[in-house]
Length: 452
Ligand code: GUN
Ligand code: ZN
Image 1: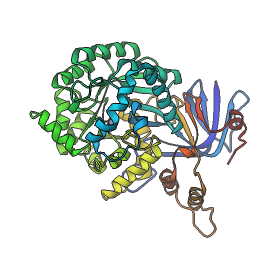
Image 2: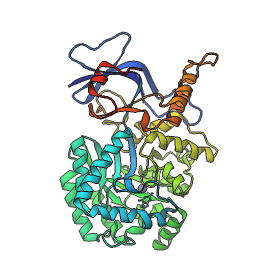
Image 3: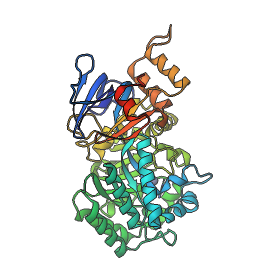
């Protein structure tokens, strides 16, 4: 019940400064014990001046980084098998690769196995909470909620709404979709750590009537999320303009249906204008920036600076299978490169905050996840500072462990870690204090046998 983890603790107490890195909001506590009781964080103590008593189970990770579990604010459960599919932009990619993969989730056994594999993969990449697209199928969505409940994970998901421009077997209709959503909400919304999201694939695949139904559904039940895609690809934007000539913009299609609110998560948001950004800010909706996917599908370069200027929320997302990795370290490294192409330098603090506390705040979940504050659930990820000889050398340079090379500051070390790191750096993931992914055996964890 009582667990003490010894490591270098890193999290955020406030939103870090944009642009040049400062330590505002950054909480770095080297060589500390993080104390967890009955799945919740109850405190932290410097290891030099305090030691846990015999009633604490000790996990020795001295020399490793302990962070709050990453939050992936937009990822598709049925798309693990389409990662890295060649040669297509968004609309071709959906037809050629993605819809056929999602059709396979009509089969209950495939959907159940797919849900388990997906959540275990998230944990093995350092992500402990996610906002997830299921498929159009009610039973596949049931299986995903059930798999999350088994693992005690924080999950926001819902059945995908699609009543047009999708192949046979992947379309619903307004009345049937509403019934399926009501049944799933009754079974899962607010049960344990599960929340339901009204899940509109994108404006292309829902009729205006379905969007109106979705808006009404969102108002009928307290605390429902809404997730969708917006303004990802220029061909998509043109198609939406032709389908909804009355709307001022793509985002306005959702606004008119009453779908924008503070629990609305919209992936991409590349091709927005100043009105749209102000609307996001004013409604409290936020953008799940998906840099890996945007690069891979050639969708465009998200304007994070404009989001900062207007003041709407931004979280970061893998968008697998458009994105090429479930690992948020890789996603953040891609986010840096996207901003570099725009002439802006994303600092490591803003990047990490967007995958932890910033995402939790945008989702209204900062009382539960996203940081190492007392009272939050102990969703934790433990990372090696380096993996392999090149990263080890780079980390030694940052630490000042290479003769003749002066030590660098904390930001330089953390930035190099997130640029070079990936899931091979991950030592363990904990969900509510329970180890759910471990590279080492339990006895090694307890003894510190592989201490760095
Ligand atoms: N737009 C509509 N559906 C999808 C999807 O599955 N992935 C991405 N990246 N964009 C979409
Ligand atoms: Zn997506």
